[in-house]
Image (cartoon, rainbow, N blue to C red):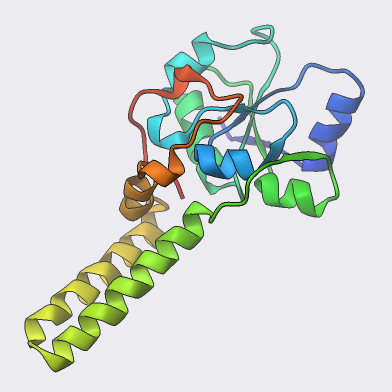
Length: 193
């Protein structure tokens, strides 16, 4: 079965009309705390358990389950996991929270944070720059690290998974408490991006 998608404006219109919209946000707690759609429940992807999410549904079983992240990549991974459980009424919110915000739709704001995607770019850049300099200044063996990081980025691009993102999502600064967090997302899952 193909994945259903819906534009943020359409999801928001359903909310405004009082239709049941059960929305889960699969970003990190820090990202969620910074900005999220009103009423979205946090179930972070790096601890995502699709079976537990489906079992803990707050809405009627026949109602759709909407999934959102920052831009759509992590939400797509979560939707695929939910579909694999046999629950087919899952909808990916196109463009994620970023598109929701850009559409001028209402969001709840909190403390600013650095997105997981930016954190990955900062770490990758630092590793490549540092170990390339060490490779030229100290010993050529240090050049193996930038090559490894480049291979990791190539793998992440091809598979749409990111080991560094998974690691960074578990760092303490990304684990701040967030209201709306759901304990159903406690089992290990694929890497967030």
